[in-house]
Image (cartoon, rainbow, N blue to C red; front, top):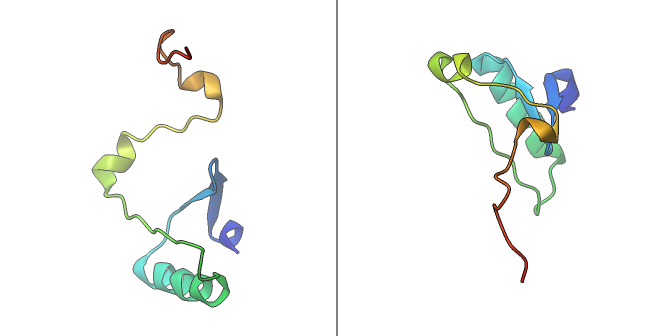
Length: 72
């Protein structure tokens, strides 16, 4: 259902450009199909946030420090 509204991105997330009417329509449609244990989080990002938002599709795009954790 969400693929008809926007772009699939990793981790079961979708990026959608929706006006208020389309957002409420999507929310209503999702409430009809979501199970009780499912969760839905709609986040509206203002334009200044969107301008600085980068899209990364590869794990190498998120480099970790060499010693970010240790297993002892």
